[in-house]
Image (cartoon, rainbow, N blue to C red; front, side, top):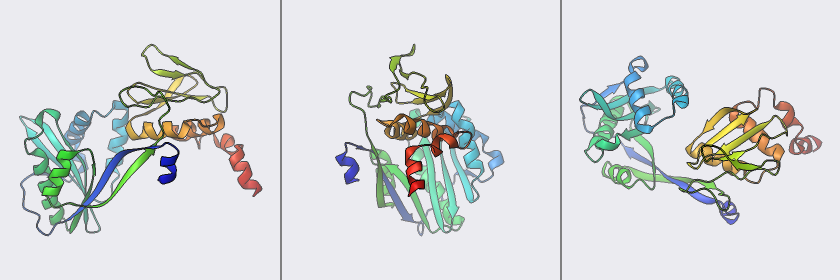
Length: 275
């Protein structure tokens, strides 16, 4: 961490991992759905409240459907509409709590606490003895709630991101393009990179909102947001063209579909073979 800080990588997305015992979990009447086949309303509400892009919703649903442990989908509804939801997973005596979200217009009305108490009670019923969760250090209301419910910090983690000088506004980094690329402005005002002639023709562009579109032969093949976009930009920042092409191939999932040759010919891998 100190080495990255010394090289100008800023600390971002500080997160606290917290745990609590379930010995005193109170009984709470809350609608918790254990059957995946009946979770469509929960998933639709989560996507809406978290503003999940449509192209990412299928992937998110597929990930949830493949959880092999006991899962509980908690929801609070008002006037036929879900206004708060959360997810609990029980495994090996632990209850993990994820995806806690309350509709923006329904916050500060006790929904978050009711969700938490309902999941803690459910987890205890399912055999869990302890619970854990992750919370951003900047989320003061959530930190206060979790303290109230008896969660104590186990450890913290964060990311190190190197932002190019003169990055885009709104706190979002703007892509620093490789030496073989040129930067211009598209019709939407986004930073735009030209098609590269090196390797397999990947290119990318970063918008003012901090999103990244990875393209191949002029067609967008991958769309990155939030932490994924920041990590990608940190990886390609100042990278040699071959490295940047390999990184884009990996992020698009094309690394094992025709890009093995590019990776195999990279000097770094050649040096490893020589050793």
